[in-house]
Amino acid sequence: MKARLLIVLLFSILIIDTGCNKNDDDSWTFCEGCAIEKWVGLYDGSGDFFNYNNDEMSNAIPTTVDITNTSDNILKISVVSEDYYSGSFNKIKDDDSYNIEIPGSSQSLSLSLSQKSDACKVTGTIKRYHYEKDSLIMDYTLSFEAERYF
Image (tube, rainbow, N blue to C red; front, side):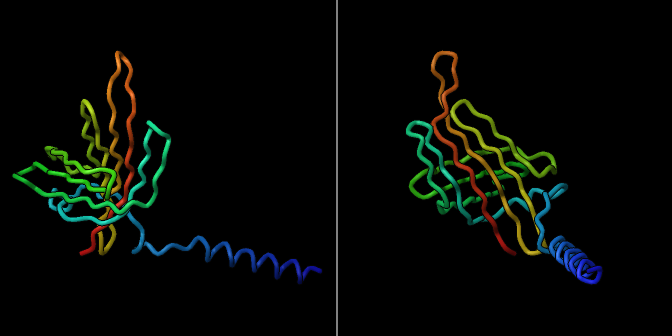
């Protein structure tokens, strides 16, 4: 009886230990301290689009994010999600943080940059909205994740 309990206990520890073992080379980390050049590039991925007007959700829409450095510390961020969204944002990037927030009167962009050994990834949300009287009315959101490899 004790032998059987000991075998089960050792087997359980072995499963837990191997299940929690991570390969650090494959994990994404926020790109804290990265220069502006690290943001620049063409990213491919997918997005989820939610239309608030008719409560419809579309998942896994092919999405590209093209980030260019137009001059010194100005980034142009273009996002295209087939048949759902196409737009651009400009941002002065004068810090080395891993996120970008661009508010606006009719749309906003929230974007973060992560990296691992051979790639960078942007994760973001675009919100489109309008105002009626004193109320903010959401039109749609596009949440996306896109990667580029070196």
